[in-house]
Length: 600
Image (cartoon, helix red, strand yellow):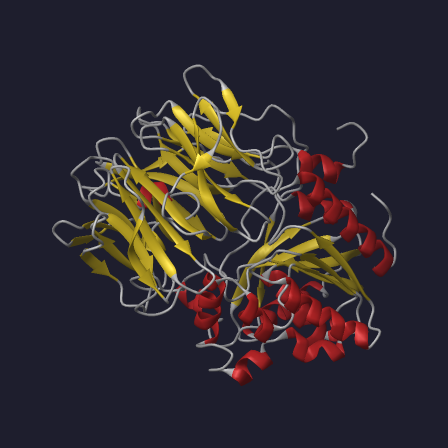
């Protein structure tokens, strides 16, 4: 990487995910890495140390699992980057790839889980249907659950294999929004062959989320995250007896179970507070809590090896993502060095309602005054954590003081904070961002005449709302894969995103026309005076191309300053070369739009 600017060295430094392994063959691990320059699925034989790339697709592949016996690797492959695709399978030792789920439709991934003789997958399709499909003993997949409301196999991208099927394959956990909205998912357990309902939890007023089944066959206890009050807490649900027991842990913040220890007498608990996480061992019977050593920072996922060693994925603002264990070692390391980033500093300010908003500030060298970038996260139900972010570091290298607010609507600060956005998108969140920039403009090290708002996805949406609603505050805007015309976006986006919009707005554009108009950036486009750069994915099914270009056309019609960069995939890129091109484009735009910036 000699001769590359520091930001590009950081961006190109390879990272990898926390490995997953088969319960029957824990020596056979599957993980994802961008070491080849494109995110692909790889395998690792822990005993021999041999590693091998499995997928080889130009769009990139983010999601892979070993089959239940460890003989093969299943991975989700898209064609264009619009996130629709299908599961393929390849022998662990190598060879050609074949379709994995005979009888399942193509569509959007809704989770995969496997146990001996049982496979279950969630898939949503273009007609707006959500389904769960199962195969028993190798037979053709068949639908066991379907709905017009959001529905998927339990578990997120880190754990559908832990949260979906019980250890013996006799029960399957499904998340759904049939009792309410996708932001308050309910939990259902079913018999995977027939779909017969075994038990239900959740009424749609608060989230009930499965995280991990007991690893002991025949033990039908399921670790669950729920919201009995404002903060996320953990319960152990014995589904066979419908016995629900809260796991009382006296730690601040939100709690979730990452995995069970062998024998199922204890769990690994991740406690999250203000964008940083810690690991704990919790004895299920006694509630005794023991801290598991981990550096300060954020922990995306954790798993327990058969010998009781805890592996986890760690990062902070200075150090890139690493896989560590509870002794501090790296069981699987990336050899290429990564230049350190600058640390993330806590930022707290008061919004117009008197609420404290938390976020992060990353500071450049020198006393300033520095140009300011308010970098807004996507989601919206997500948050900025203390993590290695090469893009943020690139803007700091350019001389910006970068501020990242976790506005109302963010996760990690309680149910009331997250749900404050419901019924008022584009105002509750934007008002918090606006209060943040006004707070920052009073700092001696900030130049209030050079202010940029930027973000991706929902952050791109907020960017357009800011430059339209508060045009006097901003020197420039960078809108990455944004929503520009909300009514058109709803008509064009994937079913899961439509479900999210119905939750946020309380209905469809036909149900709530005035609210959608009020919350649509295109409503305020004629007030925009700052130059705006758009970075748009041509096959984006979350923030589709057509609605973004409709907003661009509105600016073009009045000769408002703007630039457009289009790339060929969807809601982001899995290709490092493309990531580099995008950041170069953004930095060049900023140098044109913001006075006093120098090339880096």
